[in-house]
Length: 359
Image (cartoon, rainbow, N blue to C red; front, top):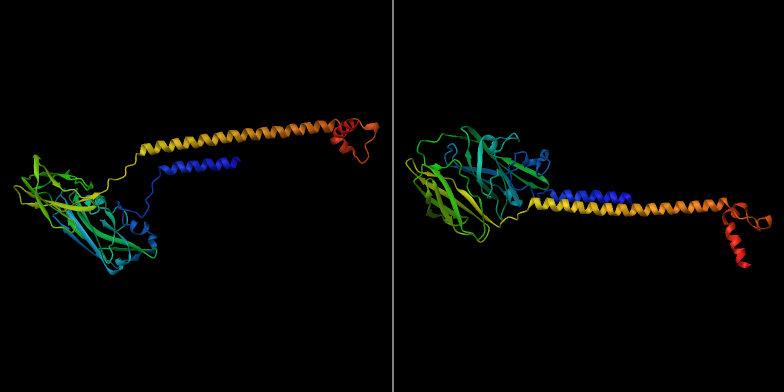
């Protein structure tokens, strides 16, 4: 019984702890990952096979210090049409560690999935044989960086991996009077469904801003941004009633040559389910205390029952011992016919009582 109680206690601890744990069902998901994840996250990296996919990429913008540019990549090939999902990396090295853009002094402002990750996952449509992804990034230091785009997918429990040729980007200092985005500008990447969105843009050395925006499969719409204060501009994009990706870019005018920003991605999605971690933690603690109380109550009860049973068994043994040590006198000084002395020591009292009843 005590072993069962200990098992119940351990199980309760596991349940309580598991409430605080996190899991990532359905795959790795978007994130900031090194290239090593291309094999290790989806199988034994030693079993990697070379993907036959062809990777092409395009760079938009001039890599001025603290100014955004866009990198777009497309992976194509008949092999991709066999699988439902594909993952794509933007990397700055091929060693398998410290190879994210951040490691090389670049910041990801947005990605085509509405996040700020160097690794993106997506599905391939029926009848399609290509997968595309894009990143809007900016350099945070004057340097020259070699970028790579890699792809991985699975098949028959085997990870397939491919990587592009490297392409170098040299970061340039900002020219005087260059119309540009403010260095601390962080673009909005997501919005809720059914909500008209006002987008804020911060600039430097800019006197006029024109915005171009488009939704997948539609034409470009052009609007003028309104300035509320020096260097701060606002424009509005209509609400979306279903999940979608809207892309926008700004045409910046000022004393220097006009500049066109890369495309920024704004994803419309269902409001995320928010979990109050503090409440979950308190509930877990309360559950743990409750289970401990039950376990202690059961332990006390069974311990008392066990003690009472043991005491009763000891009492019976004592009584039996007393009876066996004090047998009644032999009738007429002799054992009854068919009795042994050992039987008389234990059951002689019963014999005497029966004889008294018969009389």
